[in-house]
Length: 235
Image 1 (cartoon, rainbow, N blue to C red):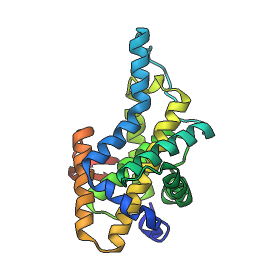
Image 2 (image 1 turned 45 degrees about the vertical axis):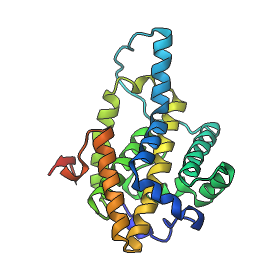
Image 3 (image 1 turned 135 degrees about the vertical axis):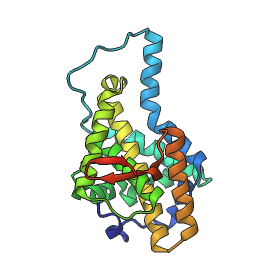
């Protein structure tokens, strides 16, 4: 993963520079996690309303999706509204214009494409999100392609084993993946900008936020994990 080699590309536009501070606080991250989990929440509510019984096991769980421009537009608007709130502005349209100019999905492809991650699969998006948070929490630079693919394989099994995954529609898979991609790329921007500026205070805040976030939401201690060619492993 060539994140640190893309330092200039990962610089946030001036108007977004302050916005990257949102990744230093847990409250903002909780709000973003709620946005990520919204498709699963809606599906659970639908099942409750309809009294649906759990789906029978399926031999193969689909995690891929064909991107629908309408879904992408909705995700970008929701993400822009989130960033705007964190920046204390109500001008969501202006924030969306700046985020589109930054081309976060394009930056994501450049960061992770060399490691074999591709848009169009929820697993790839989740793997990149776990890895960037691990990197930030531990103050590391890059991971290798073999390490990235091993983490992807681990998460593929976990996601496939989640009872809610087979019930996700293609649009819901896309929605979750694209929120992870946008959020993770903004986190990468915040981290690289802090490293380039040698801002140790910001790096410490970002690291603590990443560690606390995963401890609170995923019950994972990122600082007690190593990334190996067999995936995540206890230190």
